[in-house]
Length: 80
Image (cartoon, rainbow, N blue to C red; front, side, top):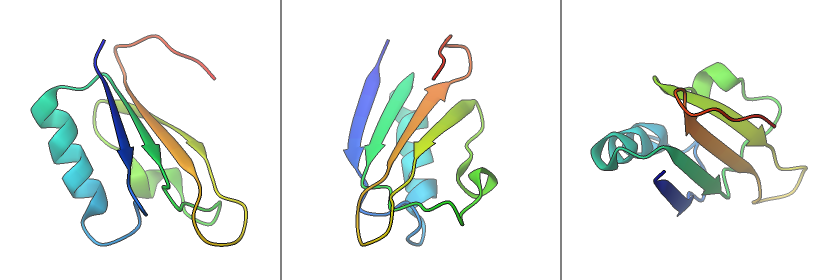
């Protein structure tokens, strides 16, 4: 299993998700752990979904910074 770790400093910034998706496809990553996602409960999962990956989130709670996202390829068995 290949794992990719990244400090995103906000997945909500312009083109961040598209760049991440291109990187994951290029390296054929099974699991990506994204720190500093800066996502909040106001942002829907659908805004950050990627084809062939399941999204797991732990959003930040107020203030600036924080948050964690994990993208796991759908053919990999996993659970929270």
